[in-house]
Amino acid sequence: MSDTLTWLNAHWDKVISLSLQHLYLALIPVLIGLVVAIPLGWVATRSRVLRNIFFYVFGFLYSIPSLALLIVIPVILGTKVLDPLNLMIPLTIYSIALLVRSVVDALEAVPWHVRAAATAMGFRSLHRFFAVDLPMSVPVLIAGLRVAAVSSISLVSVGALIGLSGLGDLFTDGEQLSFIGEIVVGVIASLVLAVIVDAALVLIGRVTTPWTRVGG
Image 1: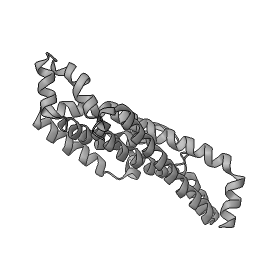
Image 2: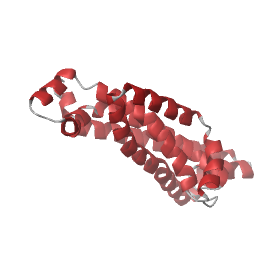
Image 3: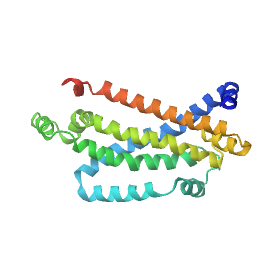
Image 4: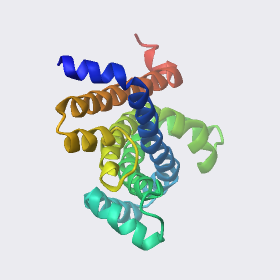
């Protein structure tokens, strides 16, 4: 334990730098995935056929091992081995796969009488989606976003296997040096990042949905 603390004291800057890189690689795909998943989820709520197709296709994509995608993406796109896109594209695919279903569940959780009232007030379909359905679906959507974000943070470590920076570097370096302390620091730092991001999303959900606390 003392060796681990000694190493950490001497390498704080490295851990912080890798943590920031880790967050960048993990969260950008989640944000892109959310932007893509929202319209796909909206379309899926309006067509049962498309919903089944989306769920099947994205369920299949999510089942593909991340390491396999890391190997295939450079071949398909012709990117360099150390290009961050090789990691961010698979993470975006996984995020979309998780979030499409979450968006569908979130939109279907909007009370029917709220939709009926908005329609009676003259809201057209697209206007009602942005003004009523999407804001009301935030609590359920945040729950899905939390899962996608934490999953993405955990998967970024795989990028170390192809030389991409992130907290996974601490795992590979610790393994090469036979120093378990560096691996422990990497695991703890990953957990801390996941907890911070999860707490931030919970806070965002509470701030953007004040009506959920009115009853309390």
